[in-house]
Amino acid sequence: MRIFLLLFLLAVPVFSQETLTNKDIIDLTKAGMSESLILAKMKSSKTSFDTSPAALIELKMAGVSDTVMLEMVGPKNVASSAPTVSGKSLEIKDAIELNTIYIDSEDERSQVEIANVLKKNGFTVLSTREGAELIAKFEFRTTTSEFGITPGIFGGISSRSQSERQLGKLQILIVDRQLDHLIFVKEHTTRNYPNALHRQAKSYSEDFIKELRKAKFSTTPRK
Image 1: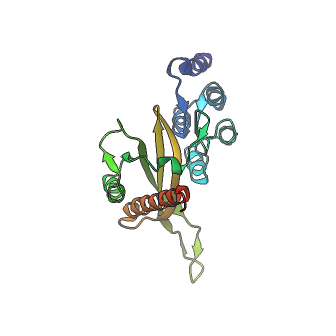
Image 2 (image 1 turned 120 degrees about the vertical axis):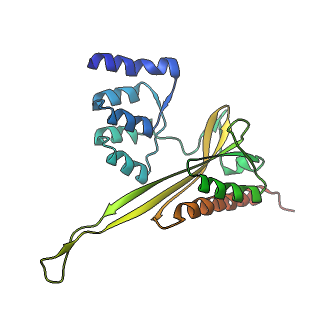
Image 3 (image 1 turned 90 degrees about the horizontal axis):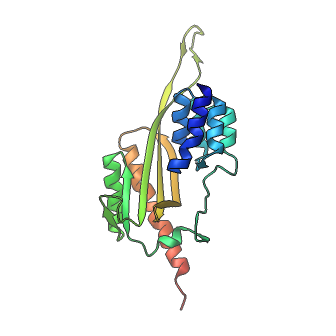
């Protein structure tokens, strides 16, 4: 059975040419695949892993082994911070002349906040990915942190406190021949208070506009 699974995992890239991501590793781990099978799959596939501190914490919480995570953070597997097309590095300045964008978010209110900021700054927001020059991808998750036991005043009473945190992440990507190239990313963890997620979405979108303006100013010829 193990040999069959190994042959299956190694054979899949031949037909689909897919790229393994963090989600794939988590899915394989939760499906009960052994560490050796996952490592074999990684070595035989194209990979693009997010190895930021927040992403590594998520992997650990999902049960991914340290051995697999060590392999993921290797230079072969980490997504390049400066993707290239025909040898040219893509940066935020490459988005100056682009104005059609698709917003990818599971939270409708956050999507509206991002769209409002982009529309006010001249972008045309599309309802589908088709025809988009840029992708705005907003991801989020809520985590619960548990603090240690605190002795009471009389020593016999103890308490444990929990705090919910909201992690929001905005990525802006340039679309080129169905390849998405990261040019901007902003993520931050904050308290999970009402509208925190929506404020993050709006704030990160405004930060992107600021960075885009800086890039435009730096490339404008001085008279």
